[in-house]
Every structure is written in C-alpha cells, then in structure tokens.
Image (cartoon, rainbow, N blue to C red):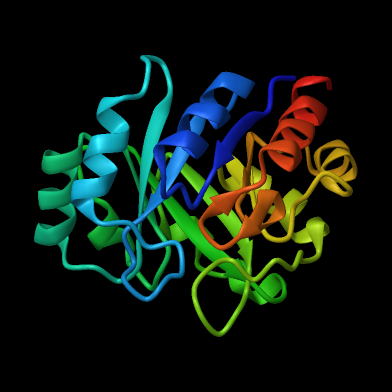
Length: 203
C-alpha cells in the first residue's frame, strides 16, 4: 500500500526542493493570511516554477472568496484546492480543479455532514480554535470510520514517533505533516523531514 505524503506549510524553495528530493508527493502552500505559515501568491509562484515535474502543488484556503482563489490558481499554477474552513458542497463544486475538504475533528459528531460532500478527498485534522497547525492528534478511530465516505488524508499532530502506528491503524490514502517536521513555523527541519518520509516510504 503506497501512502501519499503531503508536506504542508511550505514557505521557501529550500524546503520545497528537499521535500521533493526525499520523496514527498505533494506540497502545501498556505494562503490564509492569519497563518504563521502564510505565503504570498508571488512567492508561491516563484517556488512552484522551480519545482520538477510530477509533484502536486496544493493551495490551502480558509473561507476565502471564490474569485480570489481562482485568481491565485491562475497566477501560481496550483493544481489542487484544499478548503480548510466552513465551505459548503455548493462552494466546493465551483472549482475545476480537484478539491480536498478539510474536516476539523473533535469527536465523531464532526463527521455528521461528510456525506454531503462530493470531493476528491477529505483531510482530517485536529480541531483547534485557529485553523491548522495545532500539533495535536485526534482519535484515529474516527478516521477509520470516515474511510467509507472517500479518500482520507490523515493530519493532526503527526511526527516521526507516531506516523508508523497511525498508518498501520488507519491505512489512509495519504498523510499530511506540517509542525511535526518543523524547527519553527514555516521552517522545516530537514533531518526530521527525512526521517518522517523514510518511515512512510519504508512501509
């Protein structure tokens, strides 16, 4: 079983190239202005232009205006839209690109509307008062139950110490890591990055 690896919160070219070199399948660029990992569309475009082929670029948005997202897609060349806020299925259907809908999980009740979405995948993250980057995991049994609704990307507090157990238990389509491979918000620790990716690739 090949588990796809997404490295999120990319803010610089060195981290992007290192992630790709180590075997990441996708890179996440956070366009939410309040995030400590926020990146401008201009900077993202420069990084994306320098990437080799066959690595997927994902734009992360939170309750953003649809026209603004389309503007960023056109400007940067982003290939997948990840929606991290309270977006509805009607909103998700407005895009021509694949959509990943993030669900922030506190308990199993947070899945009650999952079957109303028709998207390419669901990213399950831990609930936090802000959006993303909590560094905490949630009950993985909820993720196992969510698999019947579509492709599941597991996020929330993943790191080199728990990723093996997480994958063995959940068997997700993919995993998403951010703070678990950082030395500071938006700055990856390349040693942690290598260990994390090698563990996933070694399965």
